[in-house]
Length: 280
Figure 1: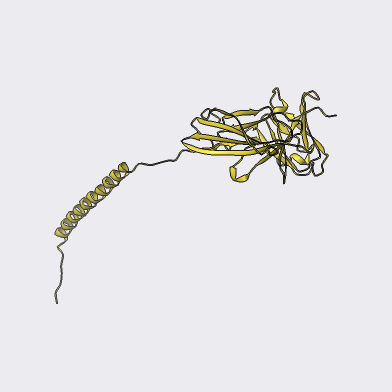
Figure 2: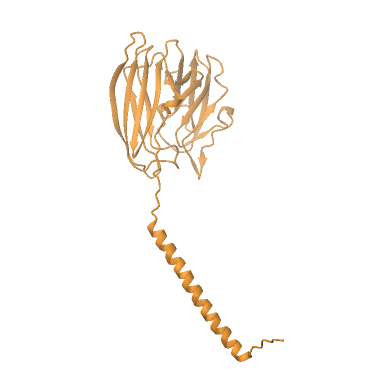
């Protein structure tokens, strides 16, 4: 019977030598693998797409066929073009924009092209929010205006809406009372011959009065500050002639203005933009 006997002293020597050889082979193998990986990593270039946001308070994606109804007495309207969806999603580069207006004169059957407007929205500042205001003037009762805005910054995107001047005396109004108290201000909204849900955009520095159920979902407090935000009042304007007054406590002293409060009533016919007026 064949027996294998290992000399203890020589066996240890052989095992030590074998360990050195295995270690060397593994070191060369790992080193070669890492070097190959490093070369492959250097050869591969990471491509990151730039974030591009082109938004508006009144204009929407063309597929939505947005309709904005203005009061029967309106002769102008302003809207914003923005480089951000919110304070975390914004375009870092400058956006060039062009706005065109097509006057739809249905009675005459021949649309007229109004002069175009163009400009730039600056690259995102530290808070990530840049915007430009556009105002359409010379509007006439009963006419419709198709507005299209194109924004470009490497990418290109279009926004649009049809503005209608109401012929049916469908009106939405807003009024800001700043003198009632040093602690709070009052925003009153009322409607004539139109009903729906009202959305209100508020500026920073205000605390909604949460005893009013209409503002219960306006959670604008974050990291020690009361930020600009919006909320929807689903119940106060269910009837054609309705009104509601919203109270906001002042957290940061500022010269608040009614134009800082964007108010729109929305129903199946479109969005109705509130116009400043004094309650009767």
